[in-house]
Image (cartoon, rainbow, N blue to C red; front, side, top):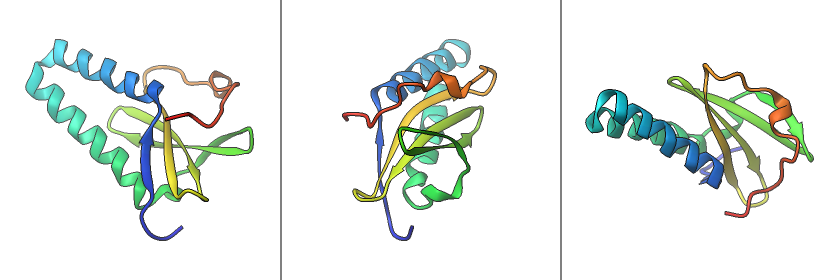
Length: 111
């Protein structure tokens, strides 16, 4: 895996980021929420340069689901080599128990 990969967010991941940013805004204000979201998005975008650097958590429908820890959140994604695209499928706070069974119907998202 050399070169740059495109990074795409599944609607579930987008929604999770919005919800988390709203929570940070409620708790700490809009300035903190903007900074938090920028750091999260920077970390997600960085997957485009080293997508294979993080461990495989499970395999669903022939796709290796990997995860990257960014601050207090785990970002779940898979790599589509033919299109050189990283698909981010979910973003979960580490305080939430994430079970591999949460992804039984995993499929290639239509983004």
